[in-house]
Length: 235
Image 1 (spheres, helix red, strand yellow):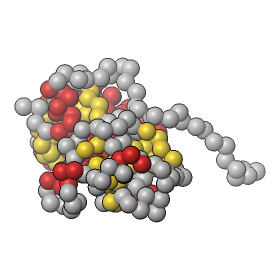
Image 2 (image 1 turned 60 degrees about the horizontal axis):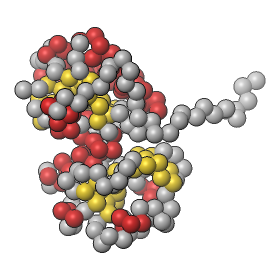
Image 3 (image 1 turned 90 degrees about the vertical axis):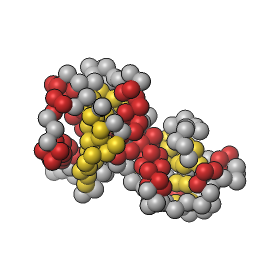
């Protein structure tokens, strides 16, 4: 049996979960602004105390690797790497869009999400990348990727081949809401990033022996971080 601590901090939501054999045991998360650096450690401590599990009983730590917020990803990955290094545990990474699609699949399985013709649906998780740009990837309802991860400036032609397939095109995530007028034929549903989306995927990766080099692993930013100069007058 595997105990995996799951960390997802790639958006405004800070989420930490504890899973055994791919099943969620306990979860802590907050959407109260970008205070991830302070909250992630507190959430981990709360989960371990609540479940009575000691840190050295963990079999691995899983982290959402991105794409997403540069700062949020940096915080989550740095925390996960530090924990793995200190405990001598393996690090597992899960694509944040894969995990978001997994949350949608779990919500449908639980009866929380209602989508017509689900078996034929195309799932498109979207993470906000500012203005009309999103990080996105298309999956089928079984969670199998149908496209590569892209940074897409959304317009009327975006995802045209998928939308013309006659299958429900389902969009969700914090980047999806701004796309509804541009993609009027898409089905918008309320699905948010969560560490619970990592649980099954992290277990599969650990079982297959797909772990990361703790010393050299970096988040998947997709785009380079750009530093801008403030226009405010300081003096």
